[in-house]
Image (cartoon, rainbow, N blue to C red; front, side, top):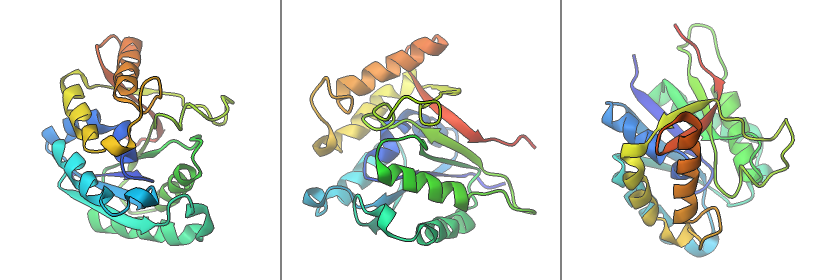
Length: 218
């Protein structure tokens, strides 16, 4: 059985904001985690953001970061099947047992397109191993969309990341140019407070929350 896991985010830092503690836990458990970034991020940071991304992921034990380098905020401008095909090729190469990606209700359009491409690329096919598909929350996107039943993030899977929280914050410090001052949710304090909120939901000091799209027990 493959021990690969893919985390697929739209922009540099998206792959860690909602998942870094869980990914650290999976790396420590022996999984090989690979980060995939579908778009470039802000153009004013393009000249060094990939270097920061490599360092941030390295902080939690992720050695391979793949940048697909599509134009920031223009994923909806390319045919969806092109992005889907790129992700399909990565799935065929690594045969992941789990994929983490954006929530379908995120405010950011690049997040929505990335989710749709992943959902299509990871569709169940006969005679292929099932892939767990899990969505994460992205602060300043998942909670900023309209709170309607079809869009709101509905956590149904929690991971205790109390022992990994310092690793998460240290990783995000490599993305300091993307962080904001509190009370912006994409601040160090905001990340920590969300961890406490999700932790209180399940009785632990810190947790990360996810919404499972598909999980198969075989």
